[in-house]
Image (tube, rainbow, N blue to C red; front, side, top):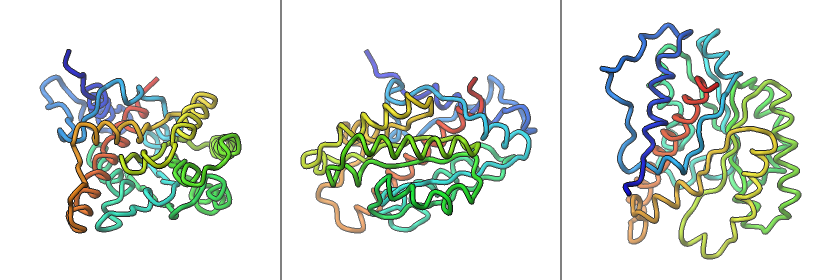
Length: 259
């Protein structure tokens, strides 16, 4: 049986463009579907169904603006990319700006290399709460996995951060670690992936399963870094970040209209 692709996500993006309060022309059956580039596609069952983002939806509808903070470590910062504008937060901003032309989109990149979730908590006030965002995408787990950090302490840090942000009226999306064959052979990521999934379930917040998405791409040879020169590897990293930006944008667009 053929693998189902993410057409449901693409449809959600069309629905977001037709979001009633944004004063945009409604989508019709004659409109072309929003499609991801072929190399970005993943099976539909790999990406969770859209979870409502009520604060973001209200801001987009009422104020025609959407402010997002990307909180994370090296891969949020854009390590390996050719340019900061190639990092996934910048690609997310471009994706949402194209899909929601009636909304002022801002995505702030607050990635700091090699930080743990506990360290990110220390800058939550200045880098997140002070910005008054509608959405925070919190990427974490890599530093913990590399260091073999205590999983219960990691869960506690995530719960503390999620609770502080949601209490401030912010929609939170949790993002788990990157995947590559070389690191997966050396580092046990599974306890930290499970921790992110557990916290998302406990607090009812969306989770973007980046590890699973990237593993699918690698296993299906969508992106092959082996044998690449430095410039070729940076170009491919740019393409990976672009695909991540498009997929996260689809999840956010879906969350604006989900009920």
